[in-house]
Length: 100
Image (tube, rainbow, N blue to C red; front, side, top):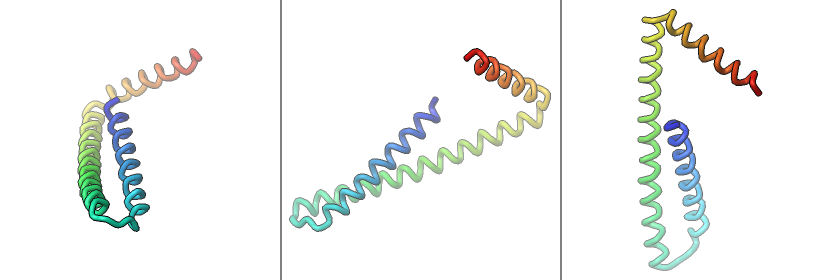
């Protein structure tokens, strides 16, 4: 569930960044000191958001690799238990699908 929330958050953040970039492009021809100040603040916020997204993506990838490594070690150390767990999960999924 945490992974789904993280994926949704990252997707939403990418959408906001893309929309903000489009807004900045659309207002590029607007003149005035106030507009220049707002554009500068928005561009800085976008740079910070983009950096946060890149950091979060790298962190998420590192955690996924670590989880895969742990799972791989467990399967190699306990092959029969892994087969039993996989069979049990497969049985439960088949049973649940069959009840529909």
